[in-house]
Amino acid sequence: MDKQLVRTCVSLPNDLLDRFDEIISERGYSSRSEAIRDAIRNYIVNYKWMTEVEGERIGIISLVYEHDQRGLTDDLTEIQHIHMGLITSSVHIHLDHDNCLEIIMLHGEGKSIKEVAEMVMALKGVKYVKLNTISPGKDFS
Image 1 (cartoon, helix red, strand yellow):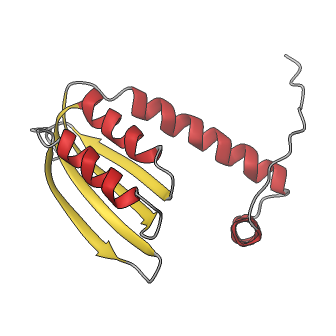
Image 2 (cartoon, one colour; image 1 turned 90 degrees about the vertical axis):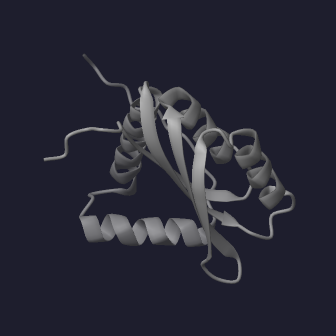
């Protein structure tokens, strides 16, 4: 199968691109394009993994966000209130003057937990979101 390459243009803030370039240099990528292809592949794998969350799950949503983003803290609080039947606890940490870390612990149907994570991901001012889930009662020995 002949793989055809397609050129695309992406606009990025300088500091984000500088950090990305540092990482690709440390990891030994031959080009920025190869590193971007790898990052996209990882994004696709993570997305597929998240869509397969089913059954009873215990989940942790970790997020970093700009605390000065207008309405964001209200939106986060509203999401947590709407889904309080899933949410068992949350922790809020001030990282620096501009950023906060929130960790939300959930227990319930995996698809519902995933929906909460996706709602959080879609909010303007959220910089990072990671969902981890496990099945309760799983044997970890």
